[in-house]
Image 1: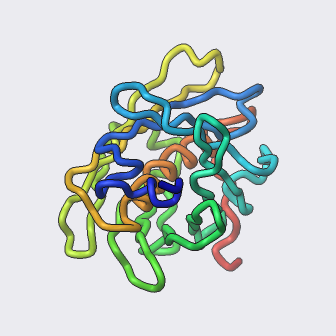
Image 2: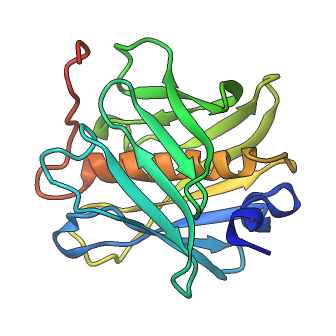
Length: 217
């Protein structure tokens, strides 16, 4: 079974009803990286950037990430466009498009984004993702909806102590309520990663905080 097929095995992301994105602190908290674990602690993969992430431009310019198996084989690629027209594109190891998260709602709504899950022009569902440090003390129990409005999962946030960093870190848990068809399992994982990515954009590095482009861009 190839990694791209495994990404939606049994209707769940990587065959797992529950996935945990485990915070990983990096030197000077300059990068964005997390482990991906099953509920029993089994390591599924590692998400890390494919290019250097700038302290001053994170969240405003495009960022690319790869999810790798423990043996180093690529599983998925994520590309965040950054800026006010935020999208996160997902590709399989061969570069084939699997879908994307696209910012919806008001362009002036910057503290919480509604992200539509899309594939080949079809909206498959949506979820909200917090994007500001002013929301980081709030409890996260964010539902993920399919296109009919039914809840198909939740994303939870838990404080991750003892990372060795002066900045707070959080783990994010994706809890799938029901099996779904491809590419929804992958897009649900992408929603969880979007939470973690925006978390690190806001609180990472010596200058953690929003770095939005002008809405006219």
